[in-house]
Length: 206
Image (tube, rainbow, N blue to C red; front, side, top):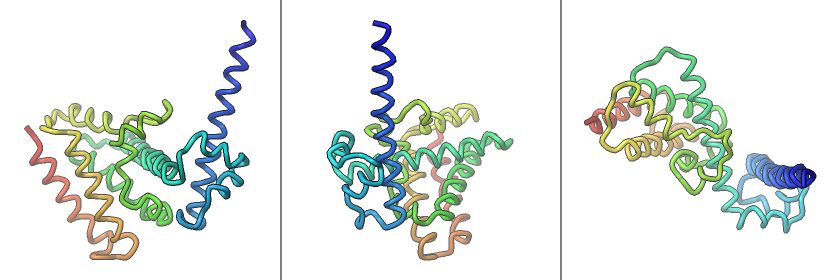
């Protein structure tokens, strides 16, 4: 009986390894050539698995992209949170703006990633179908942000809705600023965005 556990663990590890290899291969190919120009066969080949293995983990290329975007956006917010923990910022509004600003700057420095994510930045935080699939290494960003309000003694009427609106506002409006400098350059637009975020938070306070 004792020999079964290591074998079972090895199979599970191998399963996750293939899953992660497919995600990483797709990520690199999408950045190199764009989502539409990459085939499932190419992803499987880059990952070192059979094409049939791809379908054991993902229904199609769109499902893979959705999972990948959710995972990457969650990672960006985690990076922002780690950076926030290194500051002495205490106000809830200032914490939210710091996080949003940090994530925006990540996207501004990685335009290919922004093109892949498009306007789906919120999926890694708010989509339970995606976040429930994450391993323990991925933080529950939404709950951390809600806890930040409580730590700052800020009571919000609808924290989930408020934070969703803030992330959606930031990702949708900043995308064109970053990619095309329209309607304003990002640096010029940011103060307007942050003012709007403060107004949204203020309006949602109890």
